[in-house]
Amino acid sequence: MSLNQRQLAQTRLEMAKNFEELNQSSEEIKRDLGFSSLDLKNALEVVPHYNPTNVWKLRDYLEEKIYEQGKTFYPFSVLQTNYYYTYEKNWSSH
Image 1 (cartoon, rainbow, N blue to C red):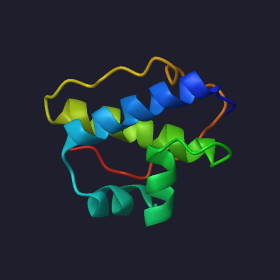
Image 2 (image 1 turned 120 degrees about the vertical axis):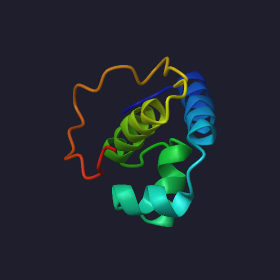
Image 3 (image 1 turned 90 degrees about the vertical axis):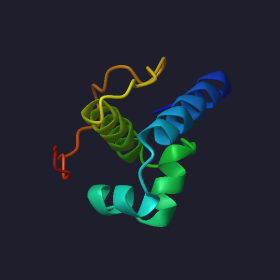
Image 4 (image 1 turned 45 degrees about the vertical axis):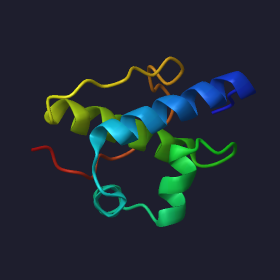
């Protein structure tokens, strides 16, 4: 995943808005996704050269969990469709 500086900044903003909207503990998110603290930090901050699969996994997790809570998901302008980074969904839906 190669994003330019503008795209990185926009995606970081969108991640932060959705993370805040979910209002769920970091510990629960890390447990659900099998992430370390560093994995969660890097995915939220969309760190260049970090594992893009984990960025997409967090993005999809936030979307699903926000909708489950009946809240409004802040749409991603850059991360709209994942064509290349497949992962196995390892969290449960309620």
